[in-house]
Length: 306
Image (cartoon, rainbow, N blue to C red; front, side, top):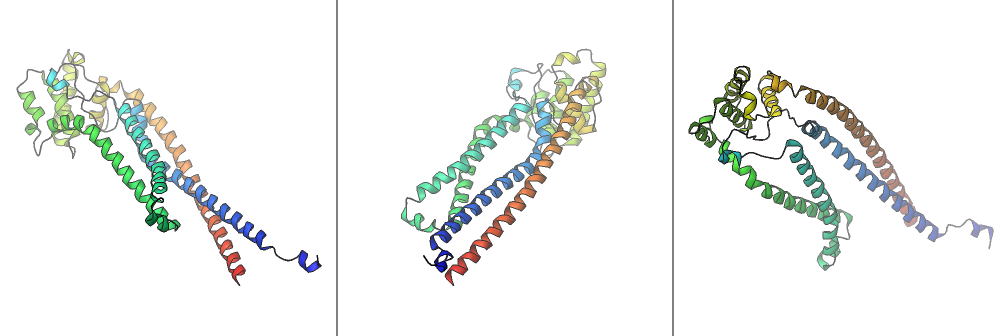
């Protein structure tokens, strides 16, 4: 072998180097997508963590459920939502994880089976078209699971939504008309009507204020108030949503839980924010490295063709 042959470029080595560079770039892209996914999840978590932490302690800053006290009759008791805030939020979070997992993995299976068809096999040779197909499959699967999720919950939610629904005046609701014909004590009626007004969309504070005020007065003057079965967390939420603070001893008994929820929520918020910043920086670095490798691959490919 001559000295010139020792320094000759081996085409096979160049090809192997190109394959290694492309593999490295693909890995960087996958890492970039993963870190970007973490960033998006962190941003979503920033908006959700407050309700999640508060619901863990059984409280919420806005009324989200209709609670029926012990004093109501059987017909009304069936309309109450028996699961607590935290259970409902866990259910929602569970559905979110299920939809992400099934849609993400299922979309790959859809593309795999579609490639067995000649029409799609030819078009999926392009990475862009393959990604578009995967994205469409992801959206279709996500939409299907979302429809299933709300279809399963619709019967329960529609039952009480119809009872508290009204156009302009809360007295138009089925709940108010039922209460007018019942023999329930006034504090119980005020408790139910206050919830109906705050659960109304949009929130009817004008209707809620006199009902909440009636509850505040009843707690101070009615010796049987504690026997009605009112939920302290529900009283705190109603008073906080209307007046911005707890006004009565029963509502104030939840203050310790609220204080703990506020502290943990602030810590969780800082932690999630740190993850979001780090994942954003990591995504940017990985993207720039990927683009650098892409440019390098193109330069090498151009030199080979010359």
